[in-house]
Length: 453
Ligand code: HEC
Image 1 (cartoon, protein in one colour):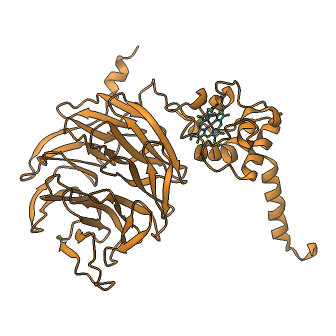
Image 2 (spheres, protein in one colour; image 1 turned 45 degrees about the vertical axis):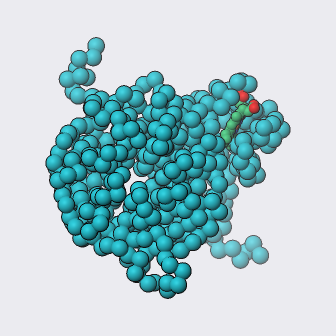
């Protein structure tokens, strides 16, 4: 049999064997830990005093001392907790790691537990040292607190909490995710969900106690950023779209995954709960808007006729009606429900087709009073529509480039907009006049740098 293996394939097998023999921290060990452990072992949430986000903190260990004894995997706490020799077995409350992952970690320790993290991949997050910016970061998400007093704005590796009458953040919520793609406050304003991740590494849902600027929990999901997170009206569950084509429903209080829903055939980029929180609408690159039962995770029905890829969804806060939009540049307003006797591929549940935009749609918002819809995307203007008639009622202009985030104030009088140019603009929803504009992050100017000793 051996002689039948072509020479090139034989070489590949030898190369694979050599690869396996030499276990690398940054290539083999860190991705496992990042994916499975950092939700509970990171600077913000340091279970048992153990931070597993860097080589240094892993080796330093937690309450029970160094987690790793180089050369001696059987005596290393890390391995003992992974195998269940010491309980509770890790990752706590989750399925145990596959044998080959535990073997790889053990082998890395046996080989001396060496650090080979490249300089550019070193974690730079520190809760004590705020991030410094030399230019404004792209804004990918915005949310008003329910009392209208605070605006949450995505930054790089953080969420900035900005009092609406100010331009300087009152709180900075620093986490592990480089990007925050969605933000949602609970109805009482106590909690903020921030979801995103670090591209091609991990996705994360962060749950913050806003008043105390404290991370309550972090859930790591998939190997890529997560998108379009939404919070149920009672704040008990969070839905999020993933690059593995699933929608995940998490329990807010514990971070536990309640459902992993696989009805989409491509990345899921937006989710929104129905009025009573019992159903979810999700949209994605497979062009579909799908209705799912949030309690059971069961698919209910397709909402739309398939056209272009969908990037965004928003619901009328007062009705079971959604607006969807994406690559095709046309926002469609649909009823969430199809009467039982209606045929598949019947488009009579479409309420409005709004006018075609200048560019792909990235963001949609529906005002709290149900009266207005805001649409924005690749082109630097936001267009406002009367939700009832579908007619254009205003435009907010002034951004220098594409817009990724829109949020109506709870009194529906202001619309916050943000995107590529890093500016937050607040415009009046009656007409679109600019009320205020600011950069949400402290910028390190060259003169400030010179002023330093
Ligand atoms: C859901 C949260 C959670 C996850 C996920 C999790 N841990 Fe833990 N971990 C804990 C808690 C809580 C403790 C303290 C347990 C106790 O002693 O009762 C702990 C303790 C530990 C300890 C002991 C530290 C010490 O010195 O006391 C190690 C080692 C550890 N975890 C490793 C891991 C590894 C490795 C992973 C990923 C494979 C992981 N954990 C994932 C919550 C978690």
